[in-house]
Image (cartoon, helix red, strand yellow):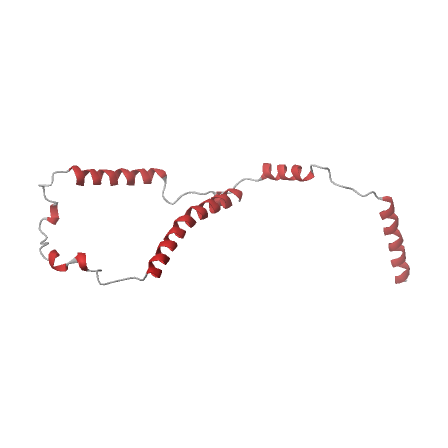
Length: 139
């Protein structure tokens, strides 16, 4: 009984396969699918890039920094610095800060390694920024 049912199913499937035509997608099938996906795709709120520090905040920081530098450079030096006038800095010459690191010496290999690593770091940061910007824009 089972063999008979299987034979009938095989015959039916063969008839269907012989009568059906092989369908192929149109030449611009991929372009049509991608255009419909792009129309329906909306970037979600979670993937929108927002910087931690906004441009307005950077502007405020820059203006504050420029004002402080201008006050230090153009200000009257005869005036005191408020609460700094009460601090005694007479102990500073005894610290001998200029000779603090004079006893340390590095080999040429260490200096070359530090220079190369620094250069690589400054090259890698912009490359990674471009990579992650492109990755965020594709999502």
